[in-house]
Length: 191
Image (cartoon, rainbow, N blue to C red):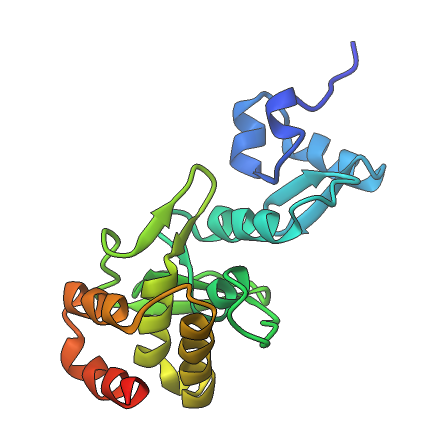
């Protein structure tokens, strides 16, 4: 009897661990990649060949599979998701706890001592992502990584597109406990 890929793994990226829990072996996964039935997206992450829909969603899932939880898509990748920037990140930017280490040229890890997982994080079944408000505040907090110009332009664009109001951004900064660092930017943008 010939093995096949279980239906629950067919339409999304999956990890080696998920495949093993479904009764597939590592050697079977290797054979499936060699025969072209599976694509190896990253170390330990696979997908059925020929799936092209929802590419960015799949990349976010791959990032979650690589980093595990807690982790959240953030900064430039989140800005791109919300269509607030012209920047096209070469890597998926992922917020992770400070000790987390992942070897992957496809991921840009943003390590944080206090990531505040319960503030401004949208949690879906397959991945977590910072909300638009949290993303814009994080852009100001991590401006040394993405550049002040990108951070300010993103906020201006989000306000111009009526996706967010400056008052809501200030409220998010207060929830995160960083309003003292954000206030000068909000005041400058409001004038």
